[in-house]
Length: 225
Image 1: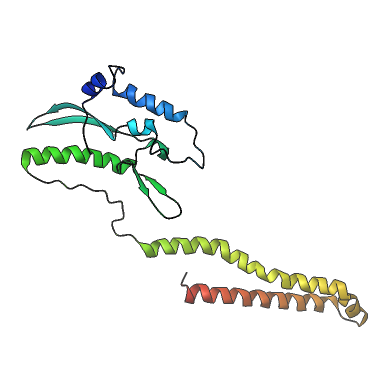
Image 2 (image 1 turned 90 degrees about the vertical axis):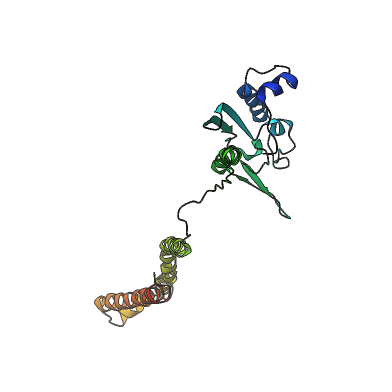
């Protein structure tokens, strides 16, 4: 934090005892922000008076001495990123050439805010530097496991669609028979219907087996699903 302000002095000297407590001060500015329109053109509130008035954090110290430090703190945990100061605690802005990206860090901000006063207290009383950070499970990121899950989902979606690519072949044979009147011509030449159904069944089944064999080979031996 760049600086600390004592609430009682701030409320007395700058706010002329306008607020009953710090919560009333914070809620007033949040309420003002709730009535401030957000549009695509004006999406950043970094220069908004209500946003800049909100503190990075609020500490309430109950007891502080060489033996004990008892306090509670509050950090802006609003889900709308425009309502956060670009302070590095609860929000970080990444500037790029085409578009700025805002990242909310509510949990990280809470940990870092507690770390700020804890580290100062330990440094003052024990001359020891405290370093705190957050590391999410797993500690070593399993990139191969992630790729495996993505590929499995893709397989469930893509493979049935690819297997449907043989549908035009089946449809073409039916349409061709109707268009050329092949079935009637075969009947005139003495073909038995049992032979017709047998040939169609064998052709369609062999075509199906060929398609499945290709997908099975690539899935099992090439991509190792």
